[in-house]
Image 1 (cartoon, rainbow, N blue to C red):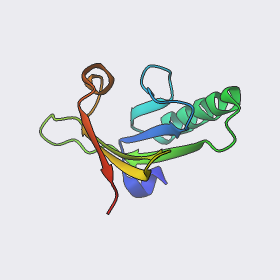
Image 2 (cartoon, one colour; image 1 turned 90 degrees about the vertical axis):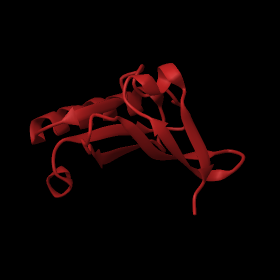
Image 3 (cartoon, rainbow, N blue to C red; image 1 turned 90 degrees about the horizontal axis):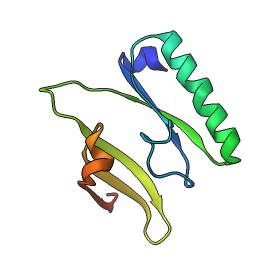
Image 4 (cartoon, rainbow, N blue to C red; image 1 turned 30 degrees about the vertical axis):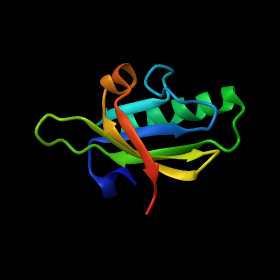
Length: 106
């Protein structure tokens, strides 16, 4: 899958139990080759097992580098609203600044 997307890629553990991926080691960023992707995948599988979250999924996304701006785009399941889209500042500042918007999907 990473070959089709092109490198670098990011892997993330999608779990309703977790919210801050960067702090708890459930996010692999800027993975640049097959070995890095495999290592991150196995690490995330281990995290999912330790959480006992059978519904957890591992998501792979391309890392798009343009102009030095880090943005975060994703989806989350809200108990109140169902699937929603998340958009905002990315990288290390995402959790620190908490500067993002959540809205219904189209």
